[in-house]
Image (cartoon, one colour):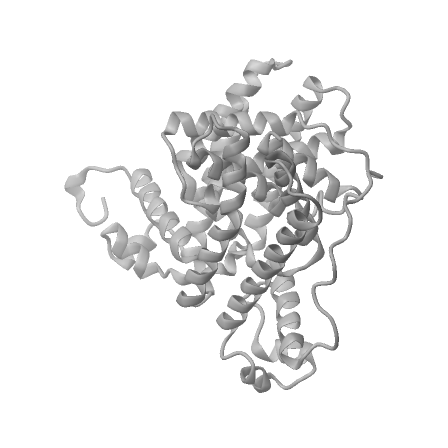
Length: 397
């Protein structure tokens, strides 16, 4: 082989080894935070040796994500080989997907956050293959639930995929077999969710979150939020933000010292909106029981998520570009927000331990986050009510 022939590793093994090392680095630091030399050093090879296997860093990311797609395709084909799959075969498929998600959490994270860094052709390939796989899942679901229409089946399959992807947004873990069984049970509840009619009565609106004329700083923050949401962090300059806010680019620095500080501010604003919405939801009437409290938190979360762009930006890959101090603060805020959900869920389902409750809560939140950003489903007229139904199904309340 390349550097040490005595190891007697085949080229394909070395290629996959390098890709595995890169996947862990990309997941930890973000795509832009990792260089070819970083990957080579972590793998114990030289830069030139790495280039024998991959043309560049983007090619490594493409290899990782395409390999992940291939694994899911193989799992799908293996479990659904029959013309008319049974519920047991569907459960087998979910178990295979759960196992791969738990064993390869870093790949799930890359699929979620870093795919946009691929070249357009690879992005199209991944979208095409993902859509084909989702279509196969939806076809099977329609056989099991003939009362569904095709669009509803597709929505439920997207939500099921989010259950397995949710393992990439947190570090909580339990024993592998237990972890996989929990994910399968959650996915099955999602697949069997009864979706509300599109004209379902919406939840009451919360009070306004801000009043009066916005300051220049607020205008800058709002402009940056919208640009980051549409283009991504790296495609936006301080000049772009200034122009959108109606000021010169250098003037932005009077309010924010860097783009990273803008991301931190966006994250804190998103957290403030969530906290305000949750407090309002739980204080608008007499103290609720645990189940009712959880339902109100779900409704509050969906209302906040779909009503403001800050949450969508704060859930993007650009999180790795937030300053270290802001990142630590935002992580603490996130944990503080999730804690009441976990406590309430534990009271409702005492058979779940605290870690299982955390995994379940993150699955519910991830479904809402993902579907609200998925173009194929986020224009559905009754999406808010559907997200509430899906999240309450995950939480089993």
